[in-house]
Image 1 (spheres, rainbow, N blue to C red):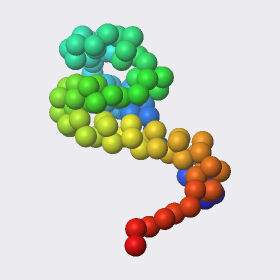
Image 2 (cartoon, rainbow, N blue to C red):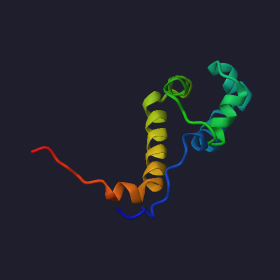
Image 3 (tube, one colour):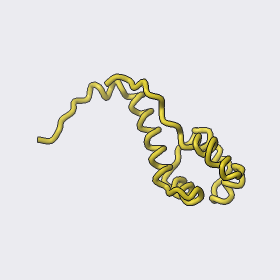
Image 4 (tube, rainbow, N blue to C red):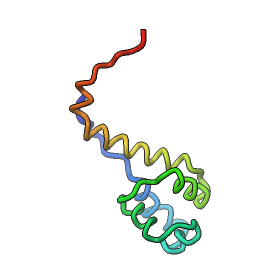
Length: 100
């Protein structure tokens, strides 16, 4: 397996920071307050320092009106891409053993 030259998927916090919150015309403080989380927690997600958990996805999905699956799927794609890049050499050495 060669390391993918594809661009990494965006962290869901980036979408939230650059597109969603500005479109909603709400501040981070207001969004955090309305979702019942701390500003620090939300800022860490927006900066990509913290992952979107299932609990946060449920909150974001309700707040943004697009459901939690979008946020979890974005986080999963981001995490998986980075894991595959980090482990590419090791993964290449693992045999594939399909069931017979």
